[in-house]
Each structure stands twice: as structure tokens, then as C-alpha cells.
Image 1 (cartoon, helix red, strand yellow):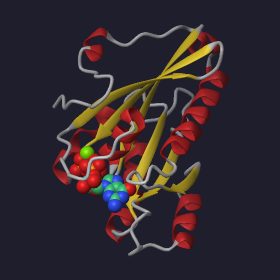
Image 2: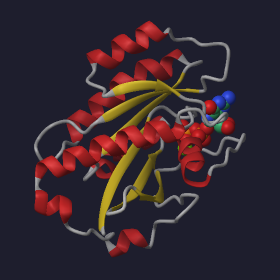
Image 3: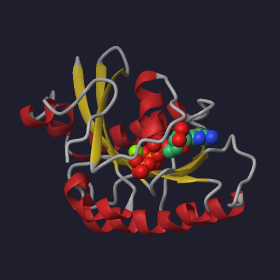
Length: 206
Ligand SMILES: Nc1nc2c(ncn2[C@@H]2O[C@H](COP(=O)(O)OP(=O)(O)OP(=O)(O)O)[C@@H](O)[C@H]2O)c(=O)[nH]1
Ligand SMILES: [Mg+2]
């Protein structure tokens, strides 16, 4: 059995639903109340990807409030994929996805020098007051090198698993085309990191 470790980032403005997304993906639950992330939260989900492969998805849920943004370089290191999220009822959070994508591309890359694969998520699609048109999202997605975009509702559990599946698939395909030794080696967590990780709800470390 080969086990892959994939570090996935979740970025975007504050209050767009990043922590809710991670919570839904890892524990299947949704919480209505907003609890601001401070620094970064960690979660892990173990996927039985195939008969021969397990994937340990390590989710780095990065605080979106402006005061935490100076730390991002530290958090991005070693990531193999990213979700950039905005809230469809908040046009500023959509416009700021440009900033988030640039921040990622400027501060991190894959071992082969290419940008890390990113999916753009239009969250809170259950709400009726959309402030962003689907055509604008499509255009923005193509112009900024995203793999794809999807509308999600963490509240209604729409496209949460699908988005993650697409991203993990892409990250795995890149990894195996890079360095077979690196890709096929069984990987463990760094001990100091492992102590900070929880298997369900994340915990702040900074
Ligand atoms: N209607 C609706 N509300 C949502 C959805 N996803 C998240 N929310 C709500 O949006 C609020 C913010 O969610 P969080 O997940 O804490 O936001 P965040 O992006 O992690 O914010 P920061 O930690 O500040 O960066 C919470 O009150 C959630 O219940 C959704 O799909 N639909
Ligand atoms: Mg959060």
C-alpha cells in the first residue's frame, strides 16, 4: 500500500466559508455561527483512494482577515494544491481572489517550478442575492490560471466532496509525473506537525 501525503491550502477573504468547508469535508457537519480563524487551522482526512493507494490530505485553513496575511509565505511551503474561495454575495471577496492567486503564485510553486493547481470556489450559492455573474467568474477563472471553478454550498453540502476530489486527482497526477521516487515513497508527517494536527476539527497554532 502506498500512502501519499498531500498538503492542500484553503485561502480567501474572511467570512467566505473556508473553515466551514473544511469542517464539512472532514466531519460532514455545518455550523451556522462564525468563529474567525486566527493564523491557521489544521485538519487531516485519510482517503482510501484505491486498492493500493491511501491519501492523507492535510488541510491548511488559512485565516482570511487582513491582519494575518503577512504570515502566508510560511504556510504555503510544500503545498500541492489550493482552494481559493469567495462568497457569491460579496463582490469584494471575489475581486480579492486575484490578490490571493497572485500571493500564491509569488510565494510558492511545485517542485517542477510550475504554479500549484488551484480551484476557485464560489461559495454560499444557496443564497439568492448573488453579487457576481457566472460569466465573470468563468472569465476570471480562465484569465488567472485556475484549473476550474465550481459553485459550492457548504450549508447544503453541494460540491464540497466533488471539489476536493478534483483537486486531489490533479495533485496526485502531478506528483507522479514529477519524481517517481518522491511520489512512490511512503510519507509520514513531520513529528512536530503531527502533534498539532487533529483528525477532525482544526486547532489554531499561531
Ligand atoms: N448560507 C451559507 N452560509 C455559509 C456557507 N458556508 C459558510 N457559511 C457561513 O459563513 C460564515 C463564515 O464561515 P467561516 O467558515 O467561519 O469563514 P472563514 O472563511 O473561515 O473566515 P475566516 O476564518 O475569518 O477567514 C459562518 O457563519 C458560516 O456558517 C454556505 O455555503 N452558505
Ligand atoms: Mg476560518
